[in-house]
Image 1: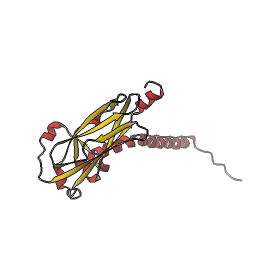
Image 2: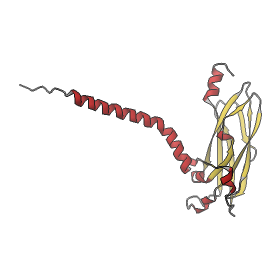
Image 3: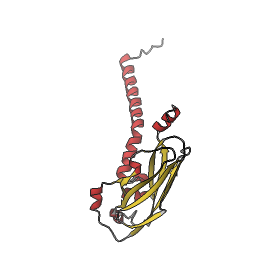
Image 4: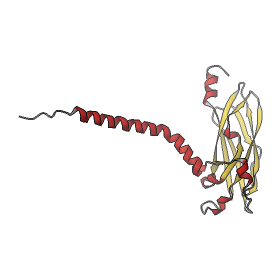
Length: 194
């Protein structure tokens, strides 16, 4: 005669709690991964993420003799009825020197639109050395129908780039922006709030 195994309810409950805790941990890590990755990129400059500098700290940066060229690229997300372009194609500057670049945006629609710019620097190795003191990308931009705006970026390339064997031979950096309509702006338009 075969013996029947009777499951231990305490053991089953413990296994169930471990499985639920594991699932909740994975869910939490899934939600936290985007902000954690963004923070990692901002701290390390990984993936071409630039650094944000304050004007006081930037004033103490020593200017090096080496020249570098910064090229500018401007894009809008598909479906965003804006014109967006840099006023200058590129700028030559000494490493550590502060420069101002200006971008122009125009809302070609018949309703207000709020946009936010995402940015990237290439080559990626230059990201952690590219410092922005002031940038339109730090805040959302609301443009009324037909409105034109000029938006400055104050930046410099940190002289520490010269001490990095993986980045000290970079002669040209591209700063690229893409404007996207904010989710709140899209929702407002869809509700008819314009």
